[in-house]
Length: 90
Image (cartoon, rainbow, N blue to C red):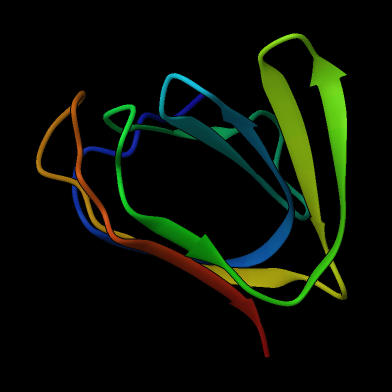
């Protein structure tokens, strides 16, 4: 899983796995594994054009887009990123 440590824009994001601890994992169409962003618990992120949100387990949830997301993900390092992460459908 690639760790997001600097600003990146991901296209064709099929779904996002999130946790209450501030971690977001982005599944990109046609790629294996996830891009992982480690944010603070109170990090700023906003996801638009959501089709569904499903609990995966106790502390994990899955966000599915209406089509596919484009996500702009800022990062200043491996951990404790503040965001703002923004995802939307084109």
